[in-house]
Length: 551
Image 1: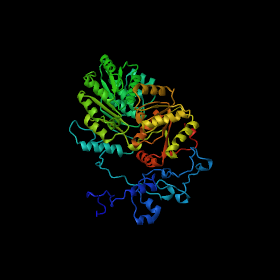
Image 2: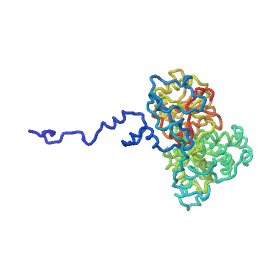
Image 3: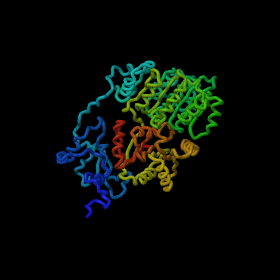
């Protein structure tokens, strides 16, 4: 007789591993698939109940409006209206929301406690920093020639970005010029600046144009829409030798659209100077680039791949380049351009002015400043200050992903909007949402990275001219594209990284104009919304019923 559990040839029958329980993880997920991850609880903690469990959580950052963060996502039998009925309208009195225990069906909730559940707590102490104690705000920051402590440099730069004193700016350059006329700029450059529409320099321009004009290496970190592009364009145009028709300035940007936008600003500001600018970007004719470069230009703006190709082909001669600018350095690094940036820099003259401009300054960008720059002037903004004044930010609780489309259509039927940008996270969703909106008689245009360059150029030209009012896109447009008429940004999908939120909503409210950002929030988005508010130390409020008055 054969032994049970064995085949006739003696091979052991396949049996599930008795030590594993493959059904347990799925069962745990089925209990509440949309609830945020939480730590395991002991029996004593469960007996203490919800109050004890939530009181054990870490305190929120000081100044956070906790009642606004306690988003309620109760299941509803039908799609909730975008604008709440009168009985649900918030009371004019600043009364806190009722505690969850008074609700008959609270449903899955954020585990952040509301204001009436938590006693006022003192401000939590600042987290310990790995950076050495600050002797003075800027002492010892610049690398002295080629001999310096790289770890100490990175540590101090990070300390300035994330901690700092009470001021808005950390700068090693004390001059502040509140008027373009006080900066010593050429007359024809001033004419171009004023003709472009600038009247008064922004805070970053007041501090950043003059040191760049003096030939100093400059690191500038500031919000989107504050005029960083005009800052380095003005500095370049001031220093060019217009009698020498050779490339004297090289500007690198992470995307074709941003490079073409920089070219446009450079041409406009230098209109009365006779500047010759060319954008070397992918998706265009290599022979045309070679022809234009051979005819002579003062400034080349481009993406790292095409610029390196032109240098390798010797179509772009680096002998006379004296200014090198990295715009949106963090984005270039995140796109994998680090090696190409290093290769390009090795081909440039040894004595060259370097400018690094970005809205955020991650460690990889600090490494570039450490390797390429000599005693740079630093104009940095604390991370807590990286929010956009003049842009009102709201969220809409849409409960389910499939309700977003109805909510979006309700919004556009209610509001009178000049121009707006809708952000989603995937190219496929751009096409899907475009078809759905057009199917409901909404006129929209769309752009993403899978489109050919000519099509994207036509769409962006129509959008800038105002003939197209609603643009659906991915994070492709989240940096550096200045369409000044945009008054509304809708995050149909929240960004996957908090850093991208700043660049998205910066498409509205450009240069101090008023703007509105609306975020669609499902149950799964609750944690990301909290992370965004914590990252920028801001409060994103629920969309009020009178949203039409905000635009």
